[in-house]
Image 1: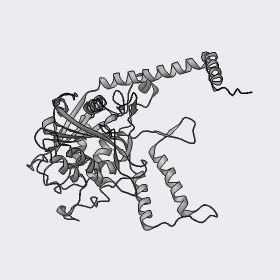
Image 2: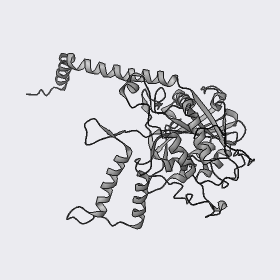
Image 3: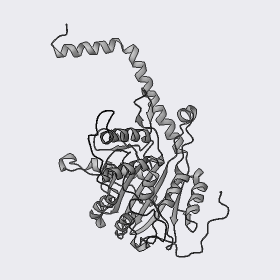
Length: 419
């Protein structure tokens, strides 16, 4: 008979755990040791990697659909190799390769940067030249190293956040196809085209002397992260998860066996389902997006923080998906951080993560939330179509004065690039 005394029950439970610790304690210790081993070998592997930062410029008169960038992303950055064996993954610490796509405003001048492991240098150059033959690709120093680390009482003002999807990965954001940018050049007058990336570029170009805005999109080929209901410990990818969701959605419109449908499929719903199906047929990328606004404290203008948040709204679709901010530096109420130390630590954490281009793996795969614990940064999936919408080189439709381009038409890709 169970005792009604709660303290006695707790004491009995503790005694049972202690008596059987010989069985469960080794398992727990092995699990903890394995976790720290994996962390150690991954950090060791990552620390030995060499990186290259490219600046990419295109001529002013190049008319290219974002489809060109989609081809670059698929052929250069959708890399799934390197971790195929247990030895490579659990002993050598190899990780799936990741890349960084960056749009940066330095005092109002816009730059497009791509950071890749040195081993992917030639592949990246050749794929960009394949789609943009007159592009100019230059290896440049890391601009983030020119900015000192944030300190609470220093001269640098910082605001930043990261972005995640507002709904499940299976639901697409508004893409360049929805904006009609998949049309062939000449079918629509260039000046009448609406390119969603121009809103972000215009917003970033509005900063002045002593101000900077950094936007970083970290990507890798999508991994299996969802629990597989058909396996005890198995995982499945975003496409299988999305198709299961789509099947459940369609049941209410098609009905089951002798049951009539419970909903009527409108034209709008039909278009949404087509968008989801198109989305699921594309290659997927695990993504992490972050944005940082920096300025000298006497030139800091908080309005630019709001403009960063507003600049992603053009990708949002009320019925489908969109971006929402997370890990925003600062707190809603003053009593949540009376000393300001928590906010300062958030800013330090964000700047370090940005400078190290760290999101998927240690040491900065966690985000400081102001508490004693750190929240794991969980990637979300963008299809190649969505990713090309968020990051591509705009054509003549973007006439932002600060957008750096090539004026000469004579540039050609190097002849010694691999095919």
